[in-house]
Length: 149
Length: 253
Image (cartoon, rainbow over all chains, first blue to last red; front, side):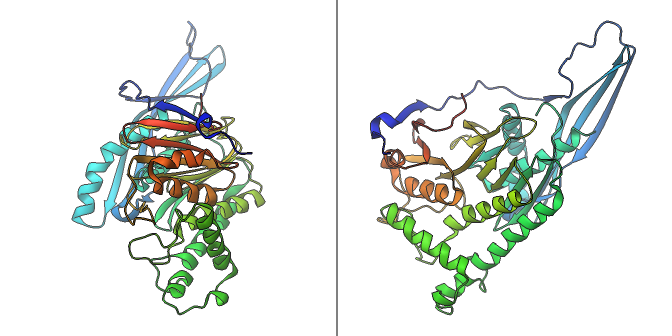
């Protein structure tokens, strides 16, 4: 079935979301957040987990680290666990001085890209650069681990 | 990503790019992933334009007659020729300035389609494979019911221009912005103008990728062309930020 050309094309302009600096992305294992009035026990643990080191094309490798804060509360024998990603970091290796420069320039940018992807709740990005894909991939692995802390 | 992510995921650098395989089914295990990556590496060895001993390089140098090439190589080159005709010459495996034999525009998607078949044979029903931004997905990004794929904003690297949502889809994006996306108009030999990126969605990643490359090479009129495709939908971002969608493009609301 061939569709009418003009009718088939819808037009829009790219919506630029309002600038929102995402400092941390909330990951909650329990649907309910209100702990209630009588908190019998509350423990907070911070742990850092890493995704695997991923080759980012010719520039080198990136390995993403997330710091997750796990809060466990027990109210009247009911346990609730919330996890919050409080920091995203990373390390990189490089092949040449040029790629060192590029990676050191790219990482803060990539971190911002990854936070944007997380806040849009997308698993992957089509059309992003190879370096971004490596960053997002390593980050996803780290988040999957963080959810098991 | 509101609760634990099930399954297994792995990233390896193959065919010059990071390839992400994300399987959300419990119980598929690493074996399916091992097999999928072994397949991708074997495709790279056979089709690479960078490895002098690959079949593609040997054919290009006249050392390997086409009829003696592996059946996969003959099938891919035949499909390239079909797509060249179907796109009025805009998808052309010799479109580069040096005229070398380069089927990589089709091979990437074709290799991912093959990897998806391997994962399904291993029992996967919820998975995604992402080869340098070209993605094939099925089922859900469990615990989410569907996969949500961001489409890269062509001008601002840390922005997403749109989100595609589906349970069974291939998504390919060709952009004038991406390093390594050497897209030329084969009729003029120059890069196209007026278009920043084209995203094509449909059942087959190899075809979606070829259509995205062709539509980008067509320049401004590529968007109209995407509206004529059967079974495939397009999203074209023009210079200036106007976005054109075909009617059935699976953009998330």
